Image 1 (cartoon, helix red, strand yellow):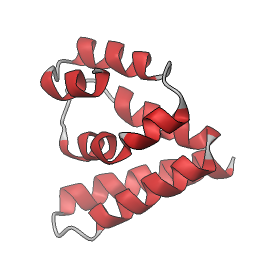
Image 2: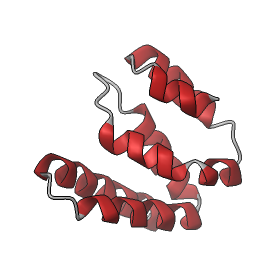
Image 3: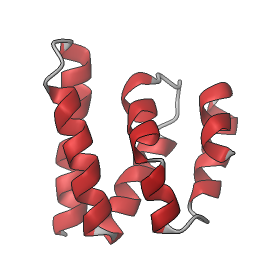
Length: 102
């Protein structure tokens, strides 16, 4: 339910609240929604909110399996020809690598 609301209500306040609620879910529940979450991280432009990016990076920092899955999904986006998408994905991959290694 929270994932569908993230897509439907892209305002910063609602987005921040819903991302904080995602921390209550177990990693296996989050893993099921990883493709959708990564797609929202890459495609949505939420003014003044990077809460979903922080959530994904935080979850991956605590779970190497999730980190690898997200890295693979982001790597697929890097192959996209859109420079803005490529730049955002490369930045996220750098943050993800830092979170999983440290």
